[in-house]
Length: 205
Ligand SMILES: Cc1cc2nc3c(=O)[nH]c(=O)nc-3n(C[C@H](O)[C@H](O)[C@H](O)COP(=O)(O)O)c2cc1C
Image (cartoon, rainbow, N blue to C red; front, top):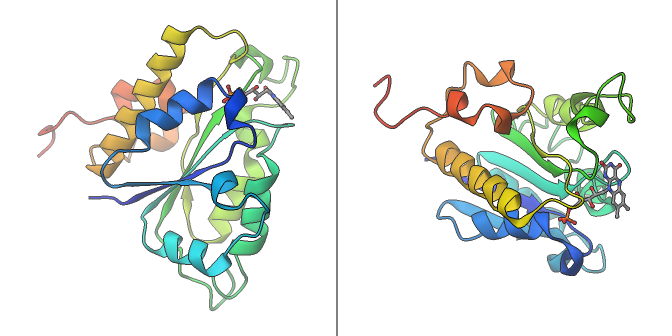
């Protein structure tokens, strides 16, 4: 069984529609530690040892957040800057994260077609997420194709609930190791091809 840590970062949860629903779908799942960074550290006073211990205790690190200015909310950047210490997370002595996996679960106001060379935002999501991908790679962590919910502005409740159900399904499958890991790197978004990515129980055994 894979132990999953969800690092959740939304600075204004009271205004959230999409992340609130996604969070509600996974926060009580057995095997998932749901860690709301803005709730735990309202003054940004991140407890580095506590965060490092949490990382050690889990196999999969999920970063769930809205896309803010083509990046993460400030808390998640602060978390990286403080928690991923040299000699602990990277460097010749820093191997504590080796072999783990990381997944971004991101919501964007912009629509899918805006995240393309010919679109409004000119770059793809993978390109915008490259700093996170390389940060984790440097720490010996495999960075998976992201789970992205595009076009959140004006998204109707039914659609939000469907994305939330996909998110729950994915975390349950990761927990139970029912993921076809060999094909995962081929996908642009984990949630665009969930049925291909998730192995049906018993299949291939
Ligand atoms: C400060 C700020 C910056 C934002 N930057 C972006 C952005 O760079 N790209 C984008 O597609 N949407 C952007 N948005 C829209 C948010 O991503 C969107 O409101 C959010 O994903 C909705 O999720 P929620 O309902 O959980 O708040 C931004 C919103 C705010 C408030």
